[in-house]
Length: 329
Ligand code: MTE
Image: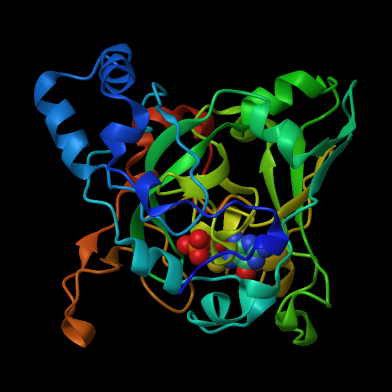
């Protein structure tokens, strides 16, 4: 069971609050969101079918359907059970089932994210301030792991660009470094030297400012389960999953390309960019196809072709115009 305890400060929903998505959003708001998105009637139906109902495990965190182009694929979402039991969160162990089993020790309140470096307005943002910083949106994103599996997940959050514009990056800021929590008391996986802790990831400033780059606080219309990166994480849908740091504590604006945990661990395997690119094989396996979690089949699972930039090429391709994506993998 994935029930957050009261010590984390979240209020458990009553069963009467566990309502279908269209009900908790309000039918009118729901339709207005669709209209604002300029979604054709046929795909509105598809989205309505694709959008899952609240699982009723954690506190509600509704969001208005995003109008950011590409943010609302109508693919079938992965089940809540799969999304919350098959995870990578090495601070809690390296098995896929470890985060669900051990992340209960993660204390997600109080929580602050420090924004520092080459910005005019650095600051410490309390979680409640971050939750109110911009309107909460719902986005359905494909996530593709470098290991060759993928999911489709409904997130709640807003574009990281909203936070970036408030802190006013200086002209010399070219990259953004994301540092996640490393606390031995709460995270048993830190005893193993599988990665350099804290887990650090980075983006070029223009990638970080892209509207699809999401600062996520929720999943399935509820606050993030611990194992999925509570209370706040990054989601960068066109990059391999490891670029999306969980349980963020620091965002730093820098001039030089940051050293990232995976790049430090295996530079020949994990480059800085890590864009999903079926034409560039991982040194130990192909990246041409992927297995969608939940589709079953075990060893004989049906694999689907992996799309360039994970299917977000129309939205992000121009960020890499003129770059040799074999060199900058
Ligand atoms: N963030 C932290 N702090 N620690 C991690 O081990 N794993 C990454 C990424 N973010 C990881 C992390 C990897 S490899 C993947 S594929 C995604 O989180 C998985 O996210 P999910 O478990 O929510 O699907």
